[in-house]
Amino acid sequence: MKKNKSENMTLGICLMIATTFVFAVQDVISRYLAEEYNAITIVMIRYWFFGLFVICINFPLRKDFSKKVKSKHPFLQIFRGAILACEVCVMVFAFTKLGLVESHAIFACYPLIVFLLSGPVLKEKINFHQWTAIFCGFCGIIILLKPGSEVFNIYAIIPLTSAMLFAIYNILTRQVALSDSSETSYFWTGISGTFFISLIGPFFWQPIHVNDWQYMALLCISGAIGHYLLIKTLEVAEVSVVQPYAYFQLIFASG
Image (cartoon, rainbow, N blue to C red; front, side, top):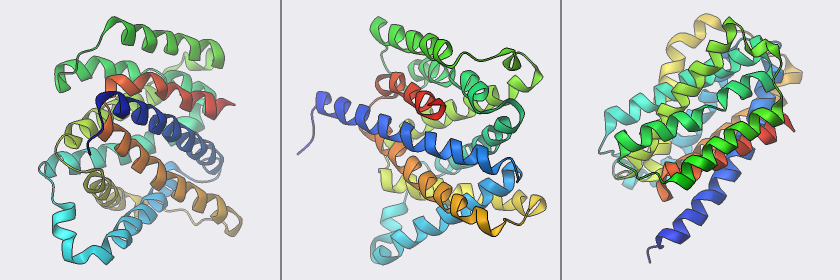
């Protein structure tokens, strides 16, 4: 039985809040690891786990494998996977140049970018209350985080670039979700992202100290869970509905 629009909205909001919590945990761990290792090494290891994980969960379903991963928008799926891998690298690098709070203060503009794109690209209707919620949320986050003068320098372009990439990823995820299942999108997110980062990652490889593998493992697990939750969120609800709740990530990360 299909859920009605109200049920989808409620489920979407709950999933978005859960997603932001997982992403916040992921950001804190990434910031810690980025003190010792470069961003590409961290992201590559995370994606190797991600890619292996999606293969393993689909392997038992090999009879239905081709049907399960077949997409009506294969090029969009590959493109959005590559964009996400790039965005994660950029954001982790931003942590090392600006810090966690300052980077998130700038990254907080990504829901606004999503709002701006959701109308012309997805043809979603955005009402005055939604615009008010997203704008007030942005202002509230800036007041809460109280970013210092460090955000007003050339390095601010790094988390801003990350915000733009993540906004595009959100839009494309919602677009493919109109015809592809969350399982299909999850598979392509892991595989295309792993392929992309593996092309450049080996040139930046740094060995991981044995004591840091526990944090790397937690990062890999949180990354895999977080992206599935986000894909599921954008499958059940419009981006314009759930975006105001994306600000919870910044509250969790700075808490």
